[in-house]
Image (cartoon, rainbow, N blue to C red):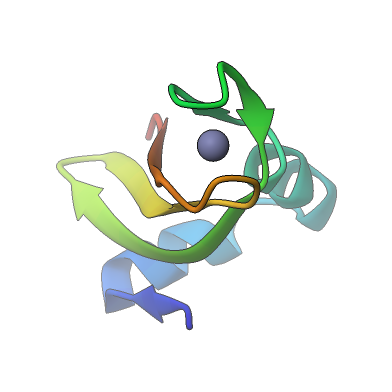
Length: 69
Ligand SMILES: [Zn+2]
């Protein structure tokens, strides 16, 4: 399930699709010690930064990715 705040959704939609898929498949997981695909994520805004919080596609641990505004 993907949950977005309205503002975060607008911000996320501005990212070109190729960049978006690159971001979503290059999230660092501290457990896997590797870059993984983020799944079941939700997006929120922190000032001008977009924050994606979700699960690691490999171990299902919590991962987060900040996208600077
Ligand atoms: Zn992991």
